[in-house]
Amino acid sequence: MVDLISHSFVVNWFILVGVFFMALLSPGPDFVMAVRQSVMHGRRAGIVTAIGFALGVAVHVTYCLLGIAALISQSIVVFSVLKYLGAAYLLYVGIGALRSRGITLDDPQETGPCTRMPDGKALRTGFITNVFNPKATMFFLALFTQILSPDMPAVISALYGATCIIMTALWFSVVACVLTIPAIKERFVKISRWVDRLCGGALIALGIRLALTKAVPA
Image (spheres, rainbow, N blue to C red):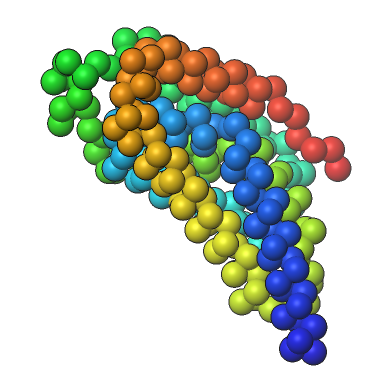
C-alpha cells in the first residue's frame, strides 16, 4: 500500500510540475508584472514581487484544497467581484505604465535610491496581481481535480500545494535575477520606454480580457 501511494504520488507530482511549469512560462499578468518590476525597480523589487506572487498562489491553493474553488467557480456573484477587482487593478497599473517615460542610466533620480520600490509595496503588488485573477481559480481547480482523490492523505495534498508555491517564487525570482544582469539590463534600459508601454498595453489587454471572462456554467 505504501509503495502504491509512493508511486502514485511521484507520478502525479511530475505531472503537476510539468503542467504548472508550462503555465508559469506562458504570458500572463504575473509574467508581465515581473518583467516591469525587475527592469524598472531592480532585482530586490523583482524578487519581493515574486514572493508576493507565491503568497497569492498560496491563497488559491488553500481554497482549492479545501474545496472552496468549486463554490467560487459556480457563484456568479463571487466570480464577478474577483473578476472586476482584478481587471480594475490591471487597468490601473497598465495605464500608469503607458504614461511612463522610461528610465535612463544618466539620470541619478531615476536609477538611484528614489527608484527603488519599498518591499511592502512590491510584495503587495505581486500578491494583488496574482490573487485577484479568477483565471487562477479555474486553473488550480482544473489542475488539482486531476491529481487529487477523496482518500488522499492531507499531507500529500499539502505537498502538491507547496510545490506550486515554491515553483512560483523560484521561477519569478530567476526572471528578476536574469533581467537585472548589467548587460541584459542595459539593453532593456535603452528600450525601457517601449518595454513599459508594451507591458502597459499587455496589462490593459489582460485586464479587458479578464473583465469579459464568463463564469463556468453549472
